[in-house]
Image (cartoon, rainbow, N blue to C red; front, top):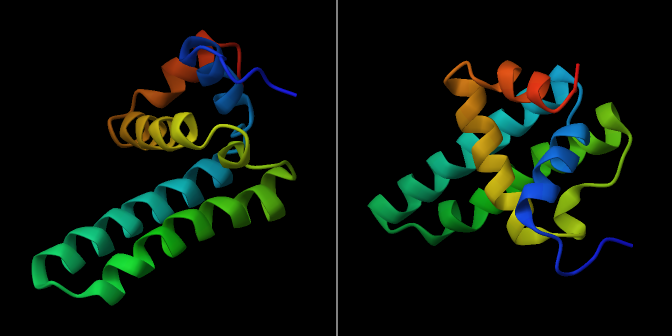
Length: 109
């Protein structure tokens, strides 16, 4: 059982290890970007349905990737806020072509 006071600096490498496979990371990116797009669109046009759909899309892609690709438990269930921050961080690193370097830094192939 992880410590409730786990520092983020210890969580981040564990998060990356839980997302080893490129397809897992790609599905997370699709879900995160789609969820953010729905959230932004919903807020822009004041449509609560789009806002409500945002976490369903975001988490849906992520959780399916863990179930079908990675075969592990999503970090969301253990550390929800760290997981959200890490998902946004991972997608930002992926989109800026810096994720490979981060994975190598932590010994993840």
